[in-house]
Image 1 (tube, rainbow, N blue to C red):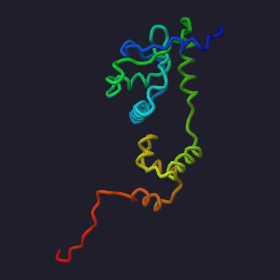
Image 2 (cartoon, rainbow, N blue to C red):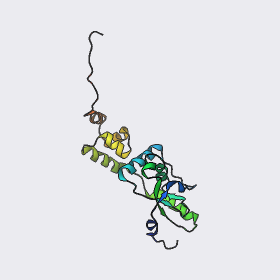
Image 3 (cartoon, rainbow, N blue to C red):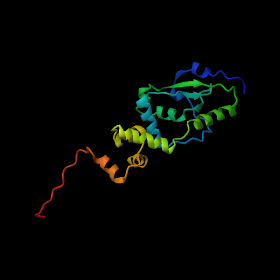
Image 4 (tube, helix red, strand yellow):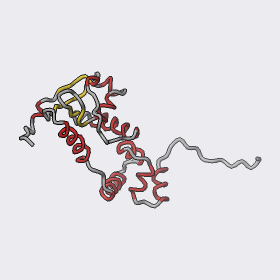
Length: 175
């Protein structure tokens, strides 16, 4: 592999019309619709933190899912149809482009069970609601429960503590 200028991609950072980019035809990474919604949530909460990585011809090497959600509302309007792009030029070496896609995907890793449990427990201990944790981390209440290590009864009590909108049941003796 020739010497790579590790700063070159960031030096090429530019905002490009989203519709000029095109997907590659080999990416094995698939994301559920639920995770795409979580990606939108992340962008809305944190801003756009990672540019899309492209070849000089604007074929996507990494960032296909960011590109996908950028074409949907509300992001399309918010971004004015543009996305941040950096160019990686492997000088026509298609194999290097494929390697780039796969290594970007694999380098993100997976969440391990014990650290995720610790995070959920800490958030609950800080008084965060199950609803807020679920929204911010893209989890259903059942997943928060499994990671919390609370008993079912304690978790249900926590879920219904401070619940509003419910009226007390009434007993009618004439019925």
